[in-house]
Structure formats: C-alpha cells, structure tokens
Image (cartoon, rainbow, N blue to C red; front, side, top):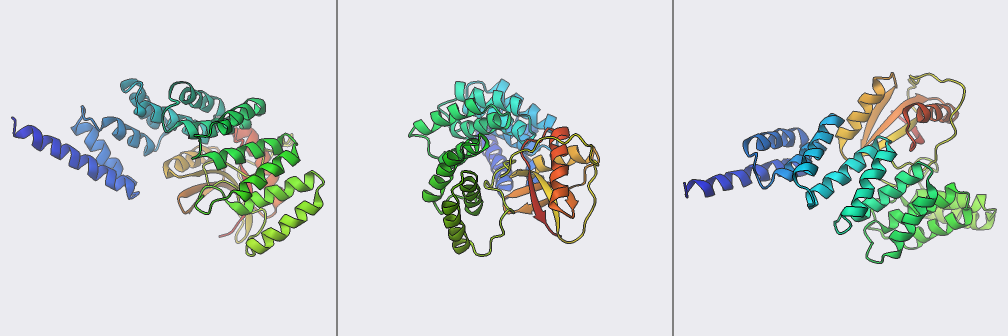
Length: 340
C-alpha cells in the first residue's frame, strides 16, 4: 500500500495537468471530457475546487455552470476558491444583463473577500452594474473609493473609463472630457483592454456637447494623424464582455419585428455581447434565437461577439436596438457596421 499511494497521487496529478493543458490550449471539448473524467475518478482530490470551476466555465447551459459554482461555494467556504466562484457568478449574471443579481455577488466580494485578487475586478463590474441600473450616485461613490486606494492598479484605467462614462451620461460633459483625456494622457501601450480611438471619439463628443469646439477640433486632428485608417463610429472602447460604447436609448412605443431582415454585403447590426468564453456566447445565441431573433457571432481575437439583425440603414438598426433592449433587458449594446 505504501508503494501504491505515491503511484496513485502521481497519476492523479498527471490527469489534472493533462486537463489543464487542454484548457490552456483552448481545446475546450477535450478539456471538458478530461475534467469530467477527473472529477468522477478522483472525487476527493485536492484539485477538485479548481476542476469544478473550470467545468462551470465550460458548461453549455447556464444552470449547469451555476450548479458547479454553487458546489464550490458550499464545499470550500471562506477560501480563494469560493471567492473565485462568487466573482464568476457575478460576471455571468452581468453578461446576461441581470445587473441586480450581479450587484449582490460583486458586493459579496467587497464585503467578504476584500483581500483576494478578485477585489479590483469586482469593483469594476459593480460600478458598471450600478451604472447600467442608473444608480449613478452609488456607482460614483464606489469609483471614488477605488481611486482613493493607491494599491488598486490592475483595473485603474478601466475604472477611470467607467467614471468618465458616468459623468458623460449625467450630462457633465466637461468632467467627462477631463476623464477621457486623462486616459489618453496616461495610456500605456501594453494596455490591451482599452481601444484608444474610441476614447478619442468620446472625448471629442464630450467637448462638442460642452460647447468647446476648439478643443474638439484639436483632438479630431490628433485622431486623424494617429489613426489614419480608423473609421469613426465602428468600435467600442473596451475589449471586454458586454461593455458597449453607447448608452441605451429610450424604448419605442411602436412595435418592431422580432426577426431582423437578412441583408447581404455591408449592413448595420446590433452587438449585444462580447465574451472570452465562447460558451457564454452560445448561451446568449440560444436564448435569443428561441425568440425568433436573427442572431450570429464573429470571433475576433480572444472575443466571441454576439450580433442581432442585419439592416440596410443605421436608423433601422437603432430602432430595432431600442426594442431589443426593452424586450430582452439588454442594457449594454452597440449599433455598428458589419459586412460578410
């Protein structure tokens, strides 16, 4: 037995590493099978909480994903694993537009797991969730708390951007311009989550709305020089799930078709999500397609983006987006130009 135990432990670790290797290589079908087999073969493994978390991330169905995360929360209370599962549940609900539920999970991170690595992203997504629910006073308070803590740095640029967006949506355009300009002035080339041309667009729009045309023109010139091939109005600021660069328009009273017309070649469409985990994108596609929505996806780098509808004009897409937002409770969307 003494010889058998080390052999079993070595086999267990090898199986775990094989599953994680497949996961890290983004071979998710293989990883899913290996993780499932591992969980069945080694029910008492020390690797089990991480296996459950990965199985949750790879689940096709939201309910299965939720069950895996709840198993971690129940079985590994007051650990880093519980903190991660709570955070991922918050992100999942945020991605589904369920901002009130997301608020609860991110609030748990701030209250019980403030010393974990999940504190900064929880601040960020909680600010976004509150802003999406138009609770901007509370969102601004959290923004101030985050910025005041000099130890917070990983999400600082993204939180600053969220703060500028809040000011913009409150009609404080000079304050918003100051926030966007700060992001531009302190931009680090290694920052992969912020798309700088779109920040310039928001800065220019802020100056225009503040009546500062001279400043707006200066940054238009800078933008033309720095990004000569960029077509304005076609991108979102954050390369991050479900964060759109435009706010939600008021819902129309007139009904609009649930299935958008198919248009070949260039067209306008409504982006309703962007996910690093394609399983979440599949979940959204299934949910919208069941209701007759004309839904499709495109993979761009690390992100699978979910789109609804193909329209001849931007005006048609804007009108459809308003109704889609109201009927599907999607508060973050982006109307953009697409092509086949």
